[in-house]
Amino acid sequence: MPLTENRGQMAKRIYELFDEESLIKKIKNKLPYLFQLAEIDNSRDGKLGMEIGSARERILIALLIYKFSEENVKVDIAITKSEIDVIVFDEPISIKTVTNKKVVGVKLIWTVDAQKAIEFINQYSPKCDILYAHINWDNEGALYLLSKESQKEVLKEFGKDFYFKLPKTGTNPRGVEISNKAINKLVEHPTTKKIMIDWTRDETIQYNSYKRWVEEWKEER
Image 1 (cartoon, rainbow, N blue to C red):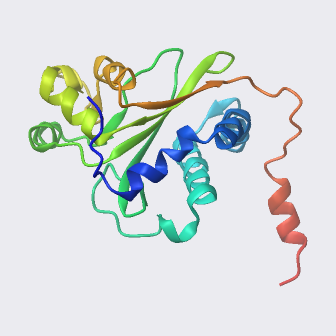
Image 2: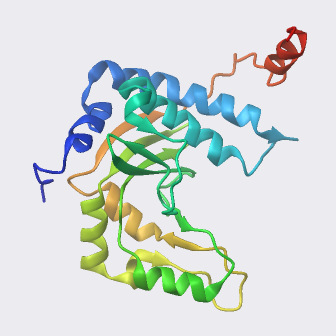
């Protein structure tokens, strides 16, 4: 089902990320490198810290700013909707990144309250497009744009039990996810934009995550 033509300026402009050949080439070349730097910055004893998700999010927001300029990308604002991470041309976008051999579901809301999770599902309606990075180191993954319309369509067609994943009864609830099955329906949807990416690590990187801060200490203020 094609996207409607009157979705607004943001829909037409953000699609340039997936339609502009020079930018596609830059994303293919630079995103694995930048995400690798983020992992180095956010690793301790070979293990990734929880802050890696925020670091990747900042990299993708920086891509949006690079392409569309700061005045069209709003980040330092009071966003009350939990799934919204950035606003581009007055349209909200959620950013999700996962590292896995397969395309897997993503968290919609974090909560330890099982009742709140159920309430969230009952009231939920997709409110924004999702910029979804599937990171598959030493193999192929992709950067996807999952439209709000496709999310609504899959939710309506297959239902809540298919679309959402809840923690099993008796376990510690950690929130509500879009299920693996639903996310695969979304990435395969005809309206979804994608850039296939070879997630090859650069073994020659000589990067010291402390160097920047050492240089800052040297500067006189």
